[in-house]
Image 1 (cartoon, rainbow, N blue to C red):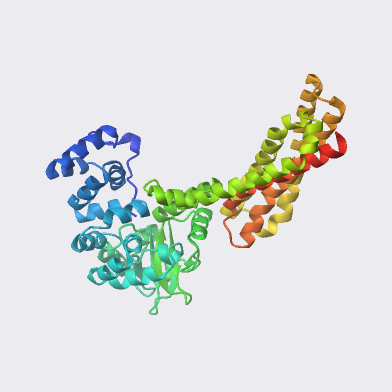
Image 2: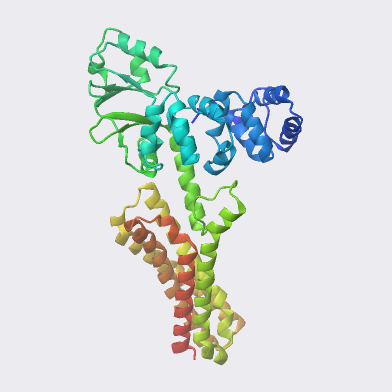
Length: 462
């Protein structure tokens, strides 16, 4: 990905355009009338991320035209900022020579991402025409969400026996290929990573000093097969700006820079939010209606079935409701209490597991703590509800207070335990723990809460 601009968005230089509805209308009109020169003059004042935002808001056909008009280097940086679905649609009919120029202007990690979004046959035809064919072929062999699929093949490599004068000269030779220089990687004749040097060490070490005498031999690296979410956690935990990627033999294969890690962290967070809402986790704003419907409908059906099961619980205890209609008054309270308690405990468990602060082995300690919290909160909520029942003199106040008090406490403990427990179980089986906050689990808590409520009411109130 292109480096983020150093100028804060609120302190842009005078004359720098901001993408808003007015600019979108102006650009659309110019595109429609074929005013290429005027369009390029306007977008020249935009960052690639802003041009990407513009492409998403102009009509789709005009977005394709604008992309064709952009210089290859700007077009490359721009498509790297787009989400996968919209990017694939935008590039679908782009002539091969335009695609070749666009991809050659990108770093290998971004070029591999773009290639992966293209139809397989288009990508196969395109690969031999690119400057970095060998590197890109290798990157495409890695899983898209692994360190190997995330890394860039451009990095600064120096030898341990070199002097710093030789190392500095290598920096100059590599400046065209390596855009962001954070660290120099020291490799032996076999390509094995044996040390690292910071940019500060490169600049301040004596010219005649040997690299091996100054380099850091203790460094943090990741294997090509490591999941990208784990890469994000490592970079966060150790405050890294780049991390080397090694194969199983310790050979340096590439590097992952902070801009790509930020994208990973954002994508994983967005995926978790979608999963918590009962979505597939990969829905984008540019997706087609059919694709969006296909991703949402299964969970709506799950919710429908779950609601039907909740209804069957109520039907099972229909006799209890006929004997004491007042019990129906508290059904919404029972379901809301269970759902809220479960979501609260699940949110903390999901957050801890996703960040690495909690491990699967922490399950009993975490659940024990949540049960203690549930008992305290349940007692407070029960006391408040029972006080309201007594004040308003509903039903048989004495028995109803006992029923609701015990119900609130039992539901608080059950739902909180489920919310804390299920993320650990899902993680143990390799499932995203964010699923613990989806419709399936919340519906399960509704069913359990209603069952507990009516069982207690049957024994105490009736």
